[in-house]
Length: 383
Image 1 (cartoon, rainbow, N blue to C red):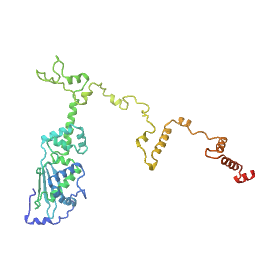
Image 2 (tube, rainbow, N blue to C red):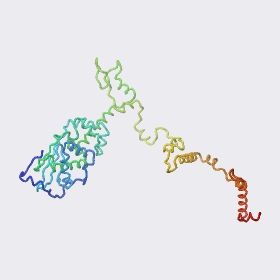
Image 3 (cartoon, helix red, strand yellow):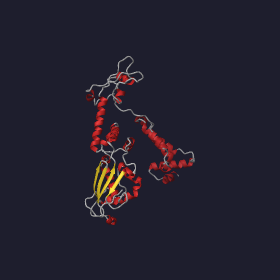
Image 4 (cartoon, helix red, strand yellow):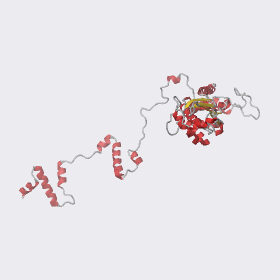
């Protein structure tokens, strides 16, 4: 709870406007919600789930005006100084129990055992799956109930949280945005301690995996099935007793167990053959033979506004023509132009729906055009 300190008789002075300060910690968010990363938003969501949402909003203006003068994060403890309406700033304390060393040992073993977590943490990022890993280890990353948080402020306001505590929560969330390891530090592990521990565990795991070289398939078979009957005890193991399972010979774990039967190259080979392809590379990559109109079939029929099914049919013929070799397209080009005699006979030949006398008149007009005379004069001289 918020504990009143100082002059209780002047408690109503807190309802006035806060004093303006210079150089305070101002929230980067000027409007809307505060918190950009998933872990800072999750932290505020947890606080709101404790029915603190309406009370938290009271401190949002304080956080954006820069009323928080100082914010320090230590294992299990957050301290701050918030300027209110009184001359002296109010001391703020937020306590959350840090995880003990044995719990962190389990968490670090899980993190080091998965390269995904180690890579993300070494890059300065917290993967979203980290919350599940902490929960599986019996050590939640965020507070589970409101009673896990101890909130204290020196103001005379009995509300929990008061606006000074709420402003501290908002700036704490933005501190988690700037450095996600501050959240883990609050829980008991600093960035340097955690990363050093992960490097040590991963180096030890790598040394254990390569301490005994796997020379061939016989060792792998021995590791899987144990020593044969009549043989002595396996190296590094104990003599099997009646009713006990055969002692398995310790070998390298993981991929070495699967790849042990493959021939191993000399140490100099990888350097000498780094740019050499392990298998012959073809001169040109293989191509997939497809129908020229495959794309048209995938697109479906166009709308009537751009041509409808008729457009697809015209494009299909064009695609097929373009897909044929150039020599084939040359042989199937349009027929040569008709000769003049054939053209004249075609023009003079009456169409099925044209009477014979109209065809004769059309032929006279054509002859007059060739002579450079109007059709009418030519007909007049013939009469």
